[in-house]
Length: 131
Image (cartoon, rainbow, N blue to C red; front, top):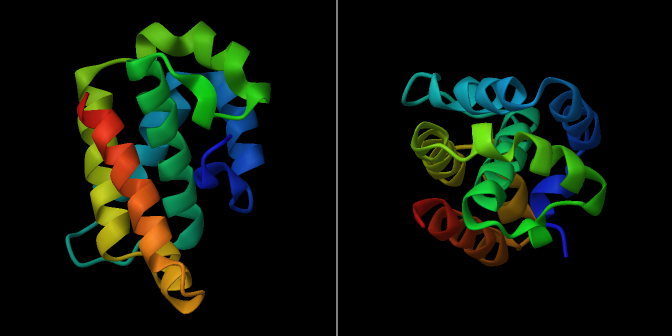
């Protein structure tokens, strides 16, 4: 089953960019979050793209695409070597931690009384990125 990261608005368009541009799309999504000032709020779209990017990095690292939509498996495989890097894993961990602390997606999860489930899902993602 695909991760909730792929259910946010506009992520399907972001994935189309990944299919075309590969690792640069992932780098840009992660940098958008990690390069913010420490107290800056992460907007929903930026957080969603960074979470999708982090899921792709995790899938490349642990060779488990089960949390990635099937429609993107071929592109993931094509770009797997470039995505599976310590640098991207580190950036992905930083982005996920940032989103967990101060983001519109965190606020939305809190409002919908899904914060525990959401945080658990992101915690699992962090574990996969540490592997």
